[in-house]
Length: 371
Ligand code: ATP
Ligand code: FE
Image (cartoon, rainbow, N blue to C red):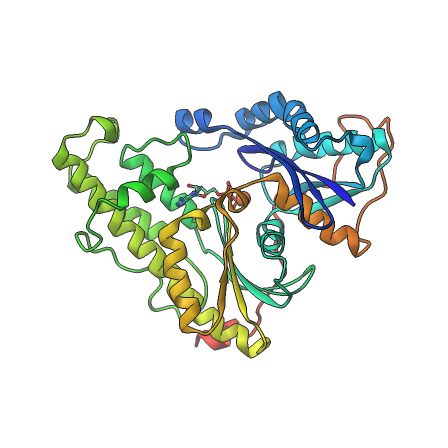
């Protein structure tokens, strides 16, 4: 069994080939770092164009590196949502073209399910049920994964995701945005004093498992203004005193942003145990899960609750094709896939794209638990 995975839901064009036994034969990612730095975010039309420019090459490289041709594939898996429809369309069109030409089935993938299930690729022992905290640029999700395709949502963000808060903070601190703001901020925070600025922890008075990062973002912006930090001056040109105060804000922000995750995880573990007393693992995945500080703090929470942390390697936490291919394998093995599309399908075909697509059902008792 060999599956090609294609991912274009946001700003990364990614493809990978994975075997049924979990062996990753190839992994290729082309990032729009320069565009991101230039526009300070993802502009859909521009992102679509960037995907279109590289998609053929990225997929070809993934096949070449795996020493395969499309003829050898058992299936093509592709992200169909959630994400920007203009961007999703580029990946889906490519996937269907290959599947149609070589007569192989196609598997439509939920991007966040792929972020969660990739933990079963990196940690082959990981069995259902398990909990997952998915932290990325657009999502903050706490879920209980009962079984393949069967998820209960314990918490989500009511406004921004943590990755968005990292990216904005990094931008306001004049950090290099080409690799995404997160990694640069993590590095700068190591130099800073996390106690120097007092930010308040979000949603203290809400006894649920939801998240909010918009208020923290505002607190950070005000702190940056009050210290007269000028984002136009890149950190590399800042005076040592200026650098110091930027690092202090970075460290203080990171501490509170992650404390919010810790508090929610603590409560979510309690909730999850009521539904499924046998859970043993908390998976932490999504781009922000590649952060070492985040991993260390969550490891502490998980151990305190006698669970085990499963955190995929950074390359599998940020957007990648392997997580899509692997999730495709999981569904394919359960017989969940679509037949090959017709080889002559027109390029303006109305694909099944799901820009907004919840992952599982909301935990209904959550509201009364929160009281
Ligand atoms: P989503 O998965 O919600 O659709 P996305 O696909 O754009 O969003 P990912 O690639 O999963 O997101 O993650 C990107 C996010 O992860 C960015 O916000 C980026 O800043 C953040 N990130 C990456 N590395 C780190 C790090 N070391 N520390 C903090 N944040 C990080
Ligand atoms: Fe993602």
